[in-house]
Image 1 (tube, rainbow, N blue to C red):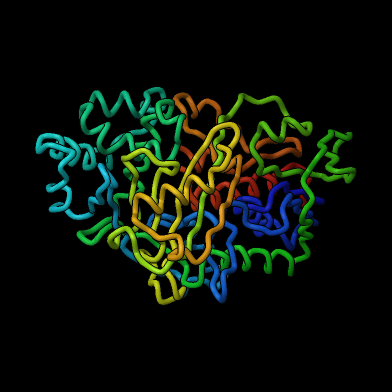
Image 2 (cartoon, rainbow, N blue to C red):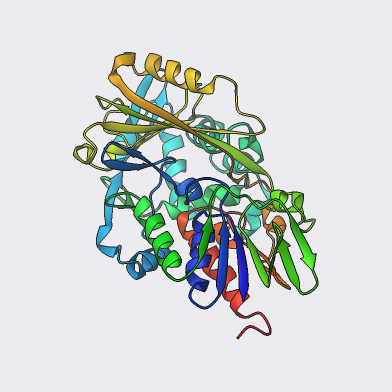
Length: 410
């Protein structure tokens, strides 16, 4: 078959990997580089992701893909520590003793939080799709635990939409992050950066004949007899990995609206650690970013020759004017950083970084498709109720299987 894949992110590249060599494939990518939210900057002799990334021990299909691409030896497991910035102070919250000393929760609150964490591992998320995370937490562990612990987490991930997010997402997040020990959460990273995964996928599919067409978004999709026409070329099948609303705008099907949010992620290189050796620092205090993710408190700073961190921000609608200056200014004030300590900074903005898992989201998830038009991505079932690289890889392989099963496919 002649196949068009719209979007060169992880799902699109994985689908091309699964189908290449047996089919004639064109992959349309609107930017000048592959990877989508998994793309990277080259800084000096190093690569660093534009948006922070790590993987989990339960990411079986992703880890299998590493092995298939010869990257298994690059996968390393490290501890990710956590903390909160509250009332102008950094509080580590990784070990039981650190959580016990956290002053913004009482002893009873901490007991309820521990109970919820243990219970979440066995909870069925299906009934939680219709309940907001806010209501669930308020009902089960109380207002103080919500405002001092969970609200900053929800704000860091969903910004203004945090009150709309379902409890299914929250419990799934607790589950996926349950592989932890006394030194922190067990997280995976590719030594050399996840650009190795993107580059290996691109190299493999290109070697099998896939044509990757950069700086060329899909601008028109039309049913043409038994085929589909994309940008004036006819295809037997089309796989779209862009948000369904965007696909509809160029001629795709009219599907229920799936809410998306944007991400504005600033990467900073600087001469010091500012988060007290904590990897993931949620901001309880108001700031133009929801979390400070110190990459070199997760991966050794010696690999980069400087400290690298992210300021993570999510938005709905248009990005706030002057956000980059606001981020830098607030960061320098809160963490007592002179501007000369910052070697460089880059702001990556994606207006469609991922779905917002609102209540009722499960009903919005489209099938992979049929009759030559297929859809897969962060909106697909494997990425609900918590998106991940694993979910995107599963969606890529899943939609490729459906395409291969199409009647008349040899």
